[in-house]
Image (tube, rainbow, N blue to C red; front, side, top):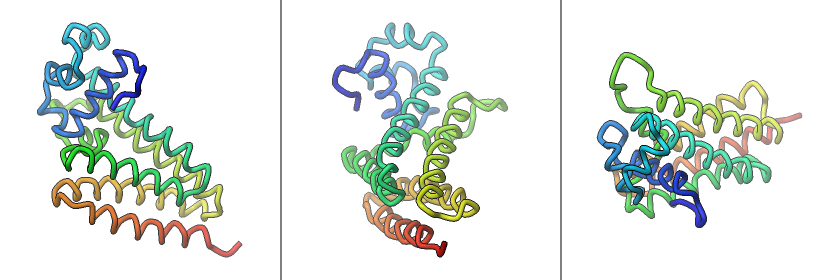
Amino acid sequence: MAKPGATSRERILVGAADMISRRGLNATSIRELAKHAKAPLGSTYHFFPEGKQQLATEAVRHAGEAVARILRTELDAGPVAGLRAFLALWRGIVVDSDFRAGCPVLAVSVEEPPSDEIPPALVAAAEAFEGWERLLTDALTAHGADPDRAPGLAALVVASVEGAIAMCRAKRSMEPLDQVAQQLETLITGALERPA
């Protein structure tokens, strides 16, 4: 959901990211993205003159950065606090949508590209995942995790949470996310308790 006072462009990006998180990119037209964002189609083309691919790419970037902002803030208190905030964010999205929405970054990542070229939205998704992993890696290392192990643990966190979100939607239950949360918190705590 767009923040109060958000610009029209930002509301379109937030609405597009939400629609992509529900239906995926290939199954969604720019007309549907505009309608879901409660924006006139003309405004959508005004802000995104290159059409659906530009809107999707920027929506994925916007969503990726929104998650990164939360991680940056919460990771200041440590990797476990960052993990809990990451999990709470996705729990809220899945539950509030009655299991209809997940992660727009993941949704774009799992679809077959429409051509042999790598679409910009897929590049934006890879950048979002890498950014989240980097933030987690830096926090783990800063709080005492082995610098050689931290990148793998960060990748495990992102991959596990993204997979758990998909499982929650399929099962219509938050149990997969709860189970993953418990295991990841144990792994992170163990990684931070290594002998000096």
